[in-house]
Image (spheres, rainbow, N blue to C red):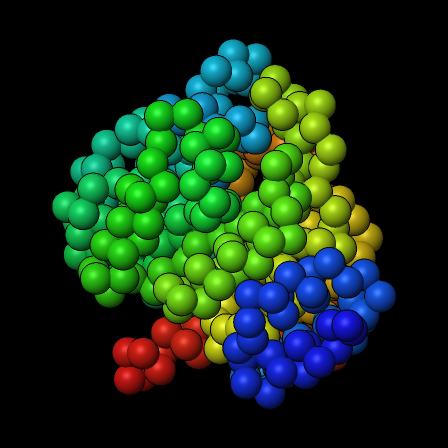
Length: 350
């Protein structure tokens, strides 16, 4: 049976069966049909405007041992760093002046930054009139609450896979249950909450990916990031086969069809696998967010989640202008709004 029936169902109703998702994922003959449907839904619900959000990777110190990640604590070959508060704030100020409406701060999962340091940085950056997204991993309810009270607006906490056995195999001493609890706490606290998947992990399958997508639909997140698995050096999976970019784009498109009003980034991992066309393909298959790294030069190459990570060796303003030009060429434009998803605004009655 062709997957077209299920793609049409998704475009019309934004729901389908688990079997339907599996059929679409396994069918490589109708990818363009799927991508075109996702692009139509993107244009209908979130227009042809792309949120450009400045990403600052404030530290690569991580206490976790995830098998796929180059930042894992057991990777002793990686030079660790922690930006100073002044460096982070200065970088954010430059981004705000250049036109970015959102500052995203990301780090490994650790206590390298104390909570009072994070809160002070948030307070200083909020003075620039921007939205703040955090991605620091699992924290307590009280920590999330403190960040929110100081002005943090959004939080990204990718789950990567919802399959219990696979999650346990890839995340030593971590709990899928606790990851989900953290996401629930973020929603309770009023964050615009994001999660995401790592597609093509060893041991995954079309059935597992379909169930992952159903999980995202059920939990009704505001933002979803989909990236292909890229083997990282000095990790247990360094010799594994990389995930396919086409599969990541399919998951991207299915996410847009299932959750038409959310924000979906064109992830750096997709562009790493195809530096020339990856970002454009992601936008044409449902994505509506770009998060270029503006981490300062001496730190940028040290945030090594995987090898050959795509980056632009340009100034903050030049990166903004580059994407402004690129989007114009494909008929899109940079959004001048604050970067909230349509979905979040509607939930909040905004």
